[in-house]
Length: 319
Image (cartoon, rainbow, N blue to C red; front, side, top):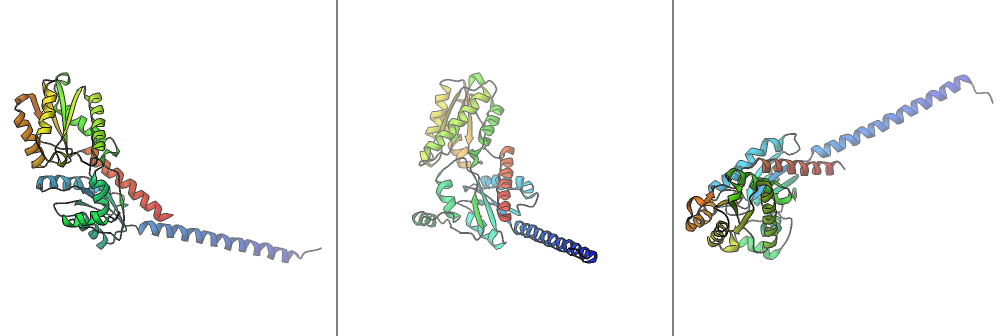
């Protein structure tokens, strides 16, 4: 069958136009999809909330606020995190509830809670998740209410990051501080004084074991003892005194290091300082009235964990 050449050219031209239109439609749909995904990602407004226990000590609170100041510029760099705040679980404002409400009022869609706590405790396992509305427990909520601790369920999506013992920052911290105090490792023993926890004593024992293993390996100090100074021992001096005396039975000097987040006059002063005074061994005891903070490794960890969780939130929004 003979096909009119003019008709043939028109058919080919029609097919080309149809193909171009289809391609244009596909490109438009692809562009619309990318624009939609971009809008979803940009619609995310993510905040970071640094949470710590809280203290009556102004100096203690100042050190925690200084940590926010130290990391703020880097946490906000890149635009994936829009704001950062600090909250205290108890004793003082701003509380967790206050800051979560502030994020809600400012239209945040997500809040990443970074607990500046050493290891698992009733605060990390029960209190903070319940205060932030991530868990429900009527009896615990009533207990918190009686302690004047507000519970707030945010409109924003709230997630909790791991604690400080998730990485090796605490081991590095203690090694650095021990080396700064040490003069002759073969003649020295180390005494670590931490808060402790009654219901989670096993977990705190494990943490101290990790610190002991790393310190011995990195410093050459082969005698290490530890004691609790918190509620688990009713804030008594005797456990710290015992740890110091046990160390001095084997070594000429005891290096005493507080495994406490920040400096609180009650703990570093009255309890640890009081125990050292009662032991009364003069220059045999080396003690610095310091704490875990400030620490560049912990600041870097806050930046890294914030970026990691913010990235997850943006990826979820783009799906």
